[in-house]
Image (tube, rainbow, N blue to C red; front, side, top):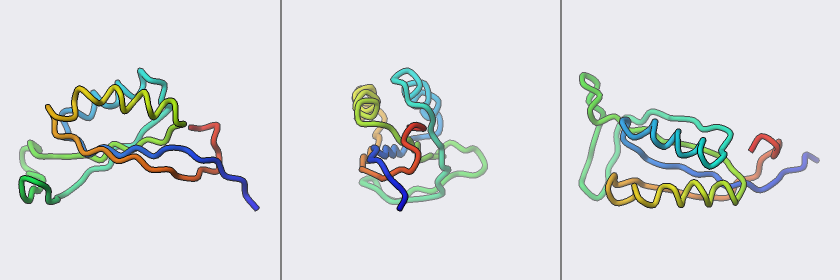
Length: 103
């Protein structure tokens, strides 16, 4: 049987212009990597939205990272000042990984 280790999965719904800032914050707290997943549309507290393919002005990404608990805590603390001002949606969950040294 393959051995697994618990890690934290962090997902942040972020407007495209703020995505580089999240990448910088993650690097600053020691996260070894992340993935940006482009989104097309959704619905939230302020109604429906969809990406404007012409200007890209409403583009959003899912910022996805896997980290140990300490690094995840530091990253989430770094996000606190941006939560209200940028309307971030942040999810944290526990996942099992096969190669924990990568995270």
